[in-house]
Image (cartoon, rainbow, N blue to C red; front, side):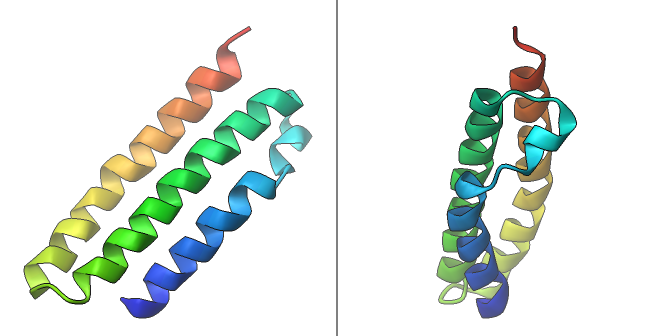
Length: 85
């Protein structure tokens, strides 16, 4: 869990600086919004998994269940921002 938490924190800090979405015909401002949101969300998930290290194993299970809404919210936000004119 420690390695996963650290990886999530690193990715969360790196994502807002990434411009890979420009290759998919999304303008720069929308790409920055999407990357910033997903980056913050990923950093929060990384911090949560690091906190679960000090809690009972049930907390890690709850964190794993939270990965599903994390992914769904990221996808919905990306589609919403990508379609806005």
